[in-house]
Length: 151
Image (cartoon, rainbow, N blue to C red; front, side):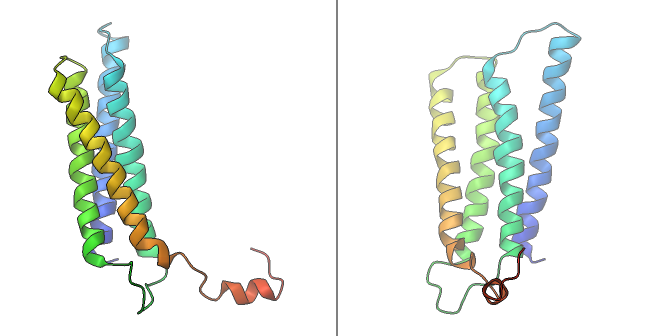
């Protein structure tokens, strides 16, 4: 497993822990302290787990597991993959921070930052899969399928 894959997978685990802790906070606030919280905290919790943890795990495993890029693949670029890692990590962490803050205070610029960081997450995911597109191909299985083998 090479470095960039480890970055995606380990960051995924960190985001999962942050998500679990934010869920524990919301559970304690509601069930023990009877303190209400708004939909911004629910959204922050959901996004740090689903986008931060699950999506980054998918990206890391795809990077590790898919066949190597062919030599003439113009789309695959390891530097672009690393850029998408940083873009995804920074935008996801920032979105979590801004959405958590928006759960406690209403400030217009925080809502603008939530939208900006959300947009950056979408861009990072699109760039990642644009670069990975050529690696999504059969490697030997098309011959076994042509002979009638079922998977």
